Amino acid sequence: MSDCMSFIPHIVVSNAAAAIDFYKQAFGATEVARHVAPNSNKIMHAMLEINGGHLILNDDFSEAMGQKPSTPEALGGTPLTLHMQVADADGAWAKAVAAGAEVTFPLKDQFWGDRYGQLRDPFGHKWSIAQTIAKPNAQELENGARESLKQAKEHAHA
Image (cartoon, rainbow, N blue to C red; front, side):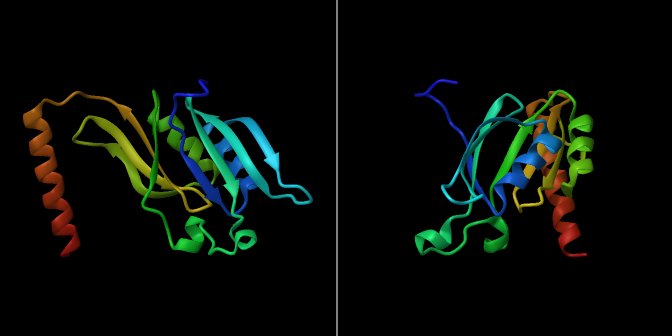
């Protein structure tokens, strides 16, 4: 990994050690680094490699800094989704669900050409898994988007 040119998501969790174990089991993560706070079992910094990319995480230290907790559980959710583009969506999905991820948007073939779904991990973070299965043209994308939005609107009013 280059020290000067990268983009790495950094998340806060309620139990970093358990999150690391979950990400290893659910997503095949490899632990690159772990730094524990002095006189504590809380993790100040950890780096994982997942699906060819990196993820930094740490325990919530808000109380030590006089701040409000910042985990998804404390905030009532998160608008952020961590995305993985994979060669085998069904295999990656099954592994994550077996590890305890909660299905929030079922894995299925989508109009934009991906087999795609969304999950929530036990720490409140959202993940999406996708596999490209088709390359629709511009007209197919527009028609698919129109139909998808129509169905969503009908479902919301049902």
